[in-house]
Structures are given as C-alpha cells and as structure tokens.
Amino acid sequence: MQILITAAVLTVAAMQTPSIARVTRSASVLVRSVIDGDTIDVATVGRVRLLGIDAPEIGRGFDTSAPFAREARERLTQLVLHRWVRLEQEGATHDVYNRHLAYVMTEDGLFVNAALVRDGLARVSARLPLTRLQELQRAEADARAFRRGMWASVPQIPAPSYTGRSKAIRPPTSRSNTPASKRRKTRTKKP
Image (cartoon, rainbow, N blue to C red; front, side, top):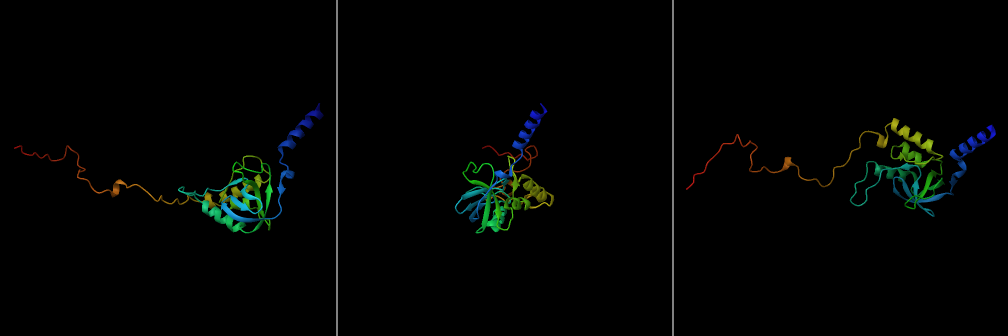
C-alpha cells in the first residue's frame, strides 16, 4: 500500500514540476522591428510576444499611450532592433492574436524579458507556471525595491489636447452674485 501511495505522490509531483525539456530554443533570428514594449517582428518567424511579461500599451489613433509605454518600446528597441536573438518557447506557442510566444535572449546571453521588468518598464503577467517565472518575479521585486520605471513616483500624465471651458474663464454674465433678498428693488412707473 505504501508503494502505491509513494508512486502516486511522485507522479503528481512530476506533473506539477515544470520540465526544462519543454523549453525549445530557436536558431539565431534577426529582429526586423519593434512593435511596442512587448512585441517584436522577427525575420522568418513573424510577430513575437515576449512571454510572461506585459508592457504598457501604446495608444493607436485617438487613444492616449499609457505611462511608460514609449519608454518600454524605446528600451526594447535599444536591446534588440536589427540584432540576432534566440527565441525560447514554452507551453502554448501562439496567443489569441496569433503572435508567437517566447522568451527572447540576445547573442551575449541577456534575457530581454527580465531586463524590461528589471528596468520597471514591464510587469510579470504569467498566468501559468513557467520555467523562468521566478527569475521574472525577482526582476520585478528588484524594480519595485529600487523604484524604477513604473514603480517610481506617480507618472506625469499629459493633459488632454481638448478640454471644455471652465467657469473660471467664462465672461461675466448680467446676473449678479448678490442674493435676491439683498438686491435693491427698483420699480418702473406704469404709464
């Protein structure tokens, strides 16, 4: 009986422990463009969403960009644009927008996903257990502790380009601010 219990416990533990064998690494690929703070366009692969992180969204059309969205895109551009990288895929290979999901590693070994989180320009958004989840969580804790990027003081949000006129700048009206009970009553003579 003890053998069956031990076997069952080991089976459950093996199924819950992330397996390193699930991570597949690509050959070196060239980054053609940076779409936003967590999405790149890679030659021969297409669009790749950085796995396990979420950067603030860039406004499109009439939408206003979220604070630190442009900074996240600029930092990702500095790290990978027109450079050779390796993609590490784990679990689901595509998201709902049909982008590839992957960790991005530079040729010199920099883990790009964690670098953006460590700079405070992205946050951990993993909903499933991932092999590199603890590394991403440590990077976020580091960014929070040192108040980097989005974890720093309150961001400066630009004023909207259109605002309605406030009462303070409206021209004075013919009505007075004196209550009706205090106003002097004038009578006009009837003919």
